[in-house]
Length: 339
Image 1 (cartoon, rainbow, N blue to C red):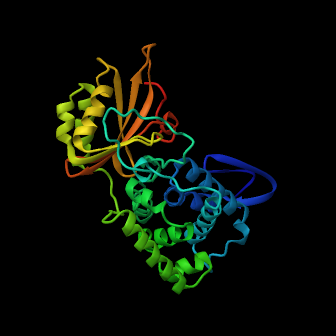
Image 2: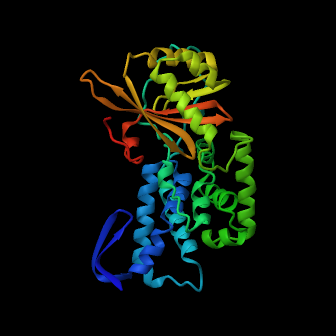
Image 3: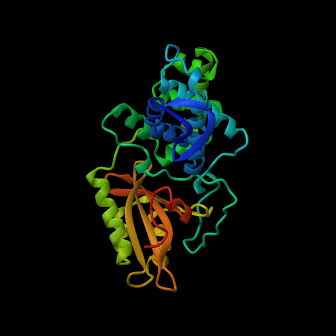
């Protein structure tokens, strides 16, 4: 069976009176979409850019399907080659995506007001729901969910594009040096050299970082419940008990950030206490970390999308809160803009 004139790829469609692609090929390619999305996200640091590049990858694969030779490489490897090269090309015109902690020191006072700077290229979160959970291919799920935590993806942005690709393929996806060399059209020796430089740079900017990650456990779910409860009741004492002494709060696209429990609680005190039913929350997950989507009631009494809080946890405590003040991020999470 073939699909002619129109083949639906990754949520879009492509029309052609000439090209034909087997439905089986399209289905097998689409099965790799979640891990390709994770791969492009690690490379680019943006869920919106990653979705665009995966779409481009699928279109390129569809157009070149007649040239795919399974005797030379698996479909998965071939798709990764297309996706990686697309990302490397995209990165030639794009700057590093950052979090506020990458741009300067913490605010000296909790009274410092955040000023949004949307013109800067900020790191974005990725919804766990887009990373796949098919029991049919556990290896693909691991590939999508490994090395996806915010701090690790932020650290990757410090690396030159090709070093970034080498480190992701070798250390996250566990490809051999020979496989990476073939993908990047270089030598295994060059790959190993690039990997050493990438690891050294990563150790400088983010020592002891945990690259691997899993689905949320009971302890992390309990943290979400306690965090939401603290906002619901304006319970800053309860929030304080959740935070580690050296907790960090950052709020892209504002460049200001706060360090330490005292400053974080003081800053939130004026924000959380908005009266009964001011805040509504939807529990979610991003970057395999607990997350909460908050809605704030406006003057018309409508609760509108306000921010997505991604929580870094250590056991049953929070060591980092990244508040993404961008309502457009609610769309990739499949969340409504009003609640």
